[in-house]
Image (cartoon, rainbow, N blue to C red; front, side, top):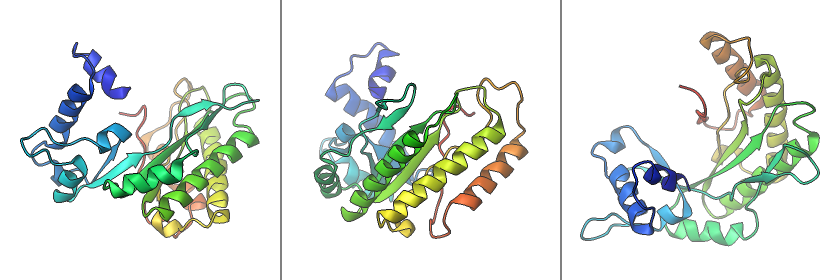
Length: 240
């Protein structure tokens, strides 16, 4: 869907071949491996190859460049039944077999994104638990298949909430996630956290300085991320 939007923008019909050609252009960029250490791909992309004469599978091509191939495995965020304006990420059905297939195709890490909204009486306890549990099940299955799971609980910027509200909600989200990850015997040393930064809502009148954002973000992660977790890969949504 995202690739189709790109192609629509330049009046190119979105087909398997045109999407393949576009991705080939990106992945074969000269010097890419000097700046990019990993690529998160979609199911279709993982199964595609370069467009040169000998057609090298993208996963093999990337590995030759010391770039790790990854795969997005969730199937998207959908309305959380019984709760207005909250979402649950789906994709656990059949995930074990998909993960094994992705590993055999060359993927070495996976990604699953949960979406948390701040608003009136949101997030609910049900939303926090449901998404944390799904992230934990995904992470456990990923490690079983030999893939490193990126754990991505995203607290959205949408809304007029203060930066302190974001701090408090993100703290609760991370605490719930790591509680579920531990219950499900996920090896935290073999995970990467992909969190939001601590920011005021996009329509909040009280803006925050870069220094405030940096301090609160570090405080939130240090307070809530277990020391065993080896790395953080921040998501950048909505920021310059």
